[in-house]
Structures are given as C-alpha cells and as structure tokens.
Length: 321
Ligand SMILES: [Fe+2]
Ligand SMILES: [Fe+2]
Image 1 (tube, rainbow, N blue to C red):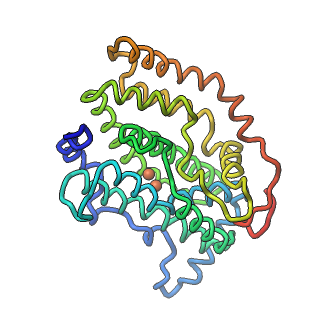
Image 2 (cartoon, helix red, strand yellow):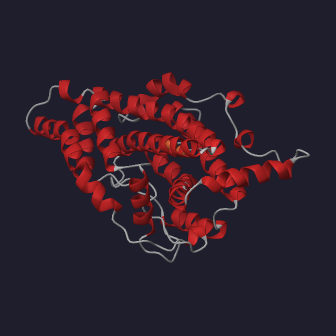
Image 3 (cartoon, helix red, strand yellow):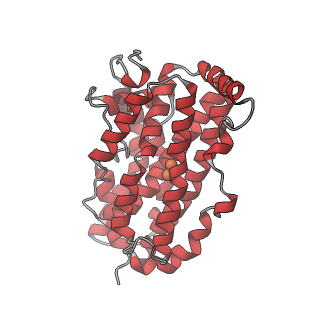
C-alpha cells in the first residue's frame, strides 16, 4: 500500500470538513430570484450596484471566475493522486474528491451568474477563455508526484481564500454588498478545504517525512504558479500575466501573500522542529529560509508582476485597463 492510500482512515476522520449537502449554501440563495414577481427589479438592483466596481477589479474577478470554472482540470489532477477507480467508490479519498468537487463547483457557477447578470462583462469572450483553459489543461508542475500535488492543493486553497476574501473586502469598501457576500461565502469554503489539505500534508510529514520534504523543496525551487496560468482568450497571449498584474496592483493576490502562505505552511507543518539529517537536513534548511527570502523579495517580485502595459480586454468588450 502506498502512503497516499494509507491515509484513508485519516481522510475519513476529516470528511467532516465538508458541508452536509442539506446545510450547504447554493448559488441561487445569493442571486436575484428569477421566479419572483419582482425579478426584474431584483436584477436591476444587482446591475446598478455592480456599477461601482472599477474595470481593474472586474478583470481580477473574471480571472478568478475563469480559474474556478476550470474545476474539471483540478479534479482530474487530484483523481490521479487519490483514485476513484469506479467513479462511485466508497473509499474516504474517493468520497472526499467527489464532495470537494461538488462544493467547488458552486464557486464558478455563482461567480459566473453574478458576472452574467451584472451586464458589465463580455460573457462570450469569457466563455471562450474557460473553454480554452479546460482544453489546455492544468499541471501543478510536479510530473504527477502525489506529495507535491497535495502540497499544491494546500497552497492553492489558501491562495484562493485570500484572493476571494480580498475581493469581498474591496467590494464592501465600494458599497457592492452583493459581491462582497458572494466572495465571503466562497472564501469560507476555501478555508475548510485549505484546512483539509494542510492537515493531510501534515500527516504525510509524519508518515513519509523525507519524500514530503523533498517534494515541498522541489516546488519552492520554482515559483508556484496559479491554477489558471494556461488561460487565454485566443487573442491576447499575455492574458494570464495581465490578470496576475491586476491582482497584484489592486492587492487581491500579491507577492506578499505568496510569502505569507509559505510562512504559514512552514509553521503548520512544523518544519523548523522536525529532525532530519544529511541531504534532508539541507532541504529543511532551505525551506526554513524561504519565508524570509520571499518577504525580502516581495516588493521586487511584486513590482515586476505589476508591470504590464494597459491592455484591451476581450472580457470587458474591448475596454482598456
Ligand atoms: Fe474554489
Ligand atoms: Fe478551492
């Protein structure tokens, strides 16, 4: 039995991090009620309140939505690790994967519906981007290594939580309460998911310390790319970089957040206190230095990321940001 499979009982103990379906929120609760008599007033109110959102924030929101909509890719990449051989297996890992997917599936749905109803964006261009992104696929850059796939998941759940949380804060600040509520709901899901993957990797550090350590070290040797990095609208070859630049500029997801995630994960996984020797001790030492290193480099990296010339966005019907 490999170490991932050996985690079935551990996963079973943590399935409670998922919401029971009858208690879970659904996108409809956070959107205008189209069956109501005053549906058009409700839609009108949403459209009016979305007018306070600046184009740059819309770009980042669209990028986040497109990333969520490429969920099939993330499920495929995790299935490769945790295995649901029949598609309806009852193993804890298979249950986690399907129920996690079902929770995540609401994120793209909800943001998609909000953006569509707002009338502020070109949905056809956005749909084309989603189509491209799912077709292009996704790789956490680990050549299929299961340890790094799960480390990537822990990192990304925290990154998306930060990102949705910051959009909530910025919309609230501008008085767009609908979107703030939507993004807070999504961020709360990401938090539960983050706890799960962080615990699972913590357990991997207990059961298979060296392989987990080397996997983490190998990931941090490169920059951990965001899951939507293959996104394109078929026209702008720099679309993803433009989106990342906007996120950096308005403070939705920044190089400082990147550094803070690494610091958080190192602490959560008790990296400094573990005892390793030889090559592993050197990898441990390398990892322990990364939070400070990224914090020191954050402004420089952030400056580079933010530097993008104004672009004409197909997502915004050709408006320039
Ligand atoms: Fe999500
Ligand atoms: Fe997530």
